[in-house]
Length: 522
Image (cartoon, rainbow, N blue to C red):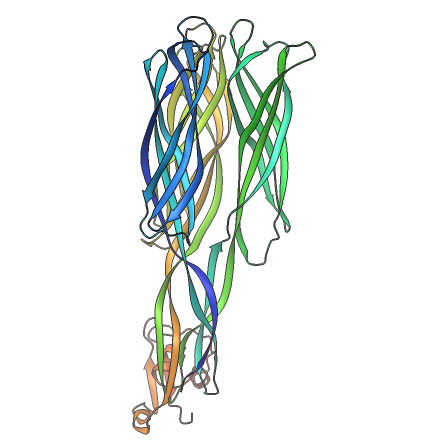
């Protein structure tokens, strides 16, 4: 006779894989007509934009471009010239097992950007790009929540907690302002470089929404129209936004990250006719998601005293979130820049970029190590180069107690984000900076569960029943429970508990004596 199984369909993450690869692309750029010949490149900046990703069986096809801005000294003249170009990107990466039904997170970044002057009108650009994907495979499994039968059945329940990430969403807000160059600075001849960054951001979770605010810091490097001198202007634009996001009872964690990109920059004259007004428009993007913990009780084991129970089951593996945390630390560092004269130099921008080299869990501790790449861009009014870059690297490491058991199957996602860089002090030999390192950590573990497909029951023969002892004083083995003993000796947990005056939830210890009496009626 078969037993009706009451099942519930669950979506679980089967596995998470990460693959990365490097590609090299290059292109020759021609100095546009009307621009003077090129003598020396001062600065090369690149912005990687991916236009499309196409997930196919075992491969990911991507397409985009690297927009580049080149600042160079002409052969004749004292000013700095600017030209723009692009390096097209169209390629694919092999990713065994990926298909369009899986959740795919794309990652890409410029690893290295280099130039080579071929002649006074032609420049070769070479870019090294890291492209990768994090693929999460999902599957459906049917879990048995209960049994429907008239037969006296003993069942053991198991509590299951499955933490899964909801699909990531975006909220975009437009931030714009009219910035005015002060009268003690020269008017704008040409904007050579503009950068935007998020500063002083705050993100708050309420019962109904995600609230975020902060400052967009705008840094403008420009050349004056009067004498071709280089000047720096910075300002901050406040922003705020909110996302309607009801907090559900099973919400365990949430994530929200902010990013900014300029969409419009326009120089306009002021009342005196001087180009001092900069209209700027940016888009701040909030990417957010929640992690929900679905709790349910499932049937873990079944038997029926006096009957043979045939159970058809299989083991299912899945990946579950075991640990998640976000930690921030404020750091002060001093960079040695010999010969930097604060009287004639202006710091335009200090950019920090993190690279995680090693992540592991050992002895309940999560260890993260890596470096922060530092790029300082500053101006030199008296030198021939006008714009100078300085690069350095700073190590970072974090040790964090996770209270996780040793497990070789952990999948660790560690993102380290430098934020809120501030220039503290500067002298002829060095400059000091403050910055915040934000660690976003997620650790996943591979688990497995026995899933019951079918249960068949048959009556035991009298000969089989007579093989069970009428009464026995049993010595508990290590790890055994009342359930294990009841199933072994064809009785019930209630009977053992009543005879020994135990509570049914009692956990016996190894070596303890337990009286077990044969059940005579079924």
